[in-house]
Length: 103
Image 1 (cartoon, helix red, strand yellow):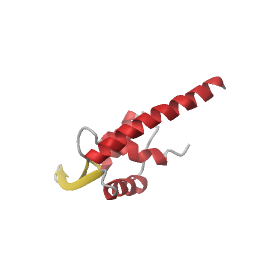
Image 2 (cartoon, rainbow, N blue to C red):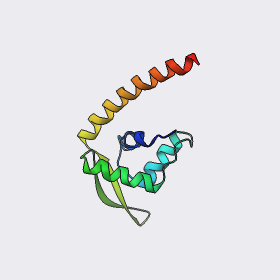
Image 3 (tube, rainbow, N blue to C red):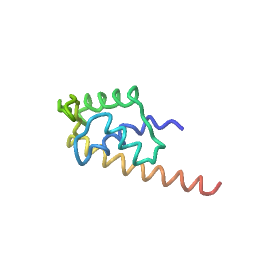
Image 4 (cartoon, rainbow, N blue to C red):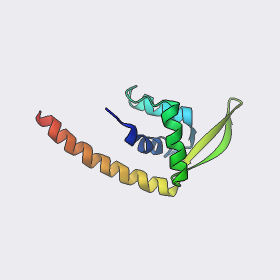
């Protein structure tokens, strides 16, 4: 199943409460999905850059354990998009569950 279209929403959720760097964002998504969702760098970073270009996240340089990192922070616009995406996901997944539950 192709979940690439859900990645921007998952990224926004992963940084909703605190900024984080790309690797940590990917690990958070993987952990919270119990390993089902495992996005690689080639997918994650283009999505982060697109979110930044759209004004949904901002980034800044930081360091972790002496290593330079680029941290991403959700913007007010990103919070609004995340709230809308959550509502839309609940609606769509509820409808799919109704259909698949009948099978």
